[in-house]
Length: 176
Image (tube, rainbow, N blue to C red; front, side, top):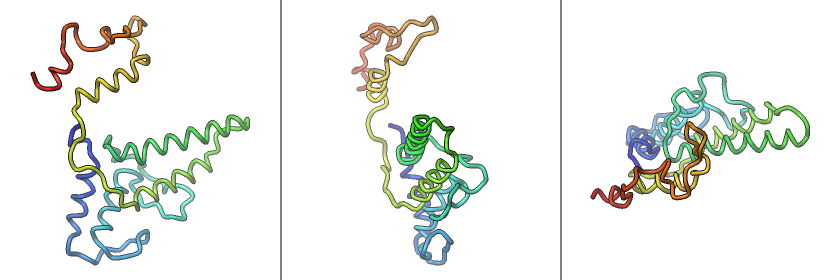
């Protein structure tokens, strides 16, 4: 809902820098297309920082997540997927009565990093939705998780943790 939280402009600005050039090479990519190279570099910078090859069994040592961002697309396609895979591995290992298999975890994280950094998925260039509407939907969806300092959950109508009494959320959203 805010252009500051979009992955699309980051990737497109990197690609624009490579327009008209063909002398960019990487051991990870298989051609000299500078737009492709700079997109890969931009994706690597915000995820693993160091390049991760297709054959990697772990992300190279370094400041992983050093330049992490909370951008739409990055969260969905990289961080949420990484969290899902970690949870699946933890549940699998717990069911088998063993500690978390860090070797397997490192391997799927490396494969995810490679897949994300070398993908060419397109992402929105402009915001989708209105912040107030999305906030209301998220609040309603997760209301049971919100607990006030005194331990009381929000009322069913959301009045305790929602907008001030008498505030018309629709009017606020529409700027009235």
